[in-house]
Length: 230
Ligand SMILES: *Cc1c(COP(=O)(O)O)cnc(C)c1O
Image 1 (tube, rainbow, N blue to C red):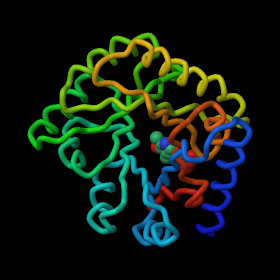
Image 2 (cartoon, rainbow, N blue to C red):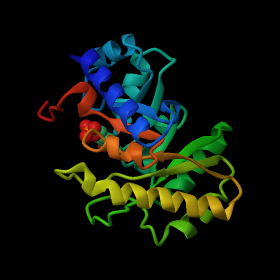
Image 3 (cartoon, protein in one colour):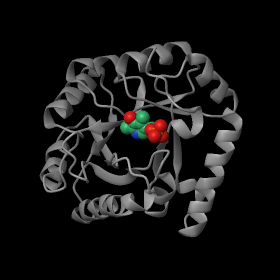
């Protein structure tokens, strides 16, 4: 099943790239493996998957310990400051930086280890009250603040679009995130790049790719439905 799912997602990405005149190489697929057992991640690994996304610190750290070291781990979920230290040297990219206080903690822990940490700023484009993320209006000032931290490299923006029946409804949100990143790029802030746009999940990644996503986060579409009961 995993093999067929991966092949299907790959075909969809290629089709979306073709429709929008993009190179397949511009889009990185992150296999969102949260709640899934290590055995299933290993199966995906054996099929060639090397980039996994997790949203819980403990789960990411456990899986990190158990699986091969050539895996690239992405922290995509809300991150509490007191847990930064457990994953800071295990992840390639933290997608979910949404407060200056969190950035301060990342800076402090990175400085201790003398490492550079790649992050994305999570933007609440849709303005949903239930969602984490910086509001578009606060974003320019937020970027300037985070740019001052010497051990943090801002690589781009991330958003979680609302769950909708028709993925077309999220097109404007993806377009908005891309425009926000272009505005920031135009300001040429030191220590900031906007090469990553992390947007699009199982239900809407094709539209996200058409609108310029460089990373898509696909869970259900690869691993099947999640079971939160156990
Ligand atoms: C769970 C999750 C995903 C993947 O969701 P699917 O709909 O299963 O593809 C993507 N991004 C974030 C931040 C998530 O928490």
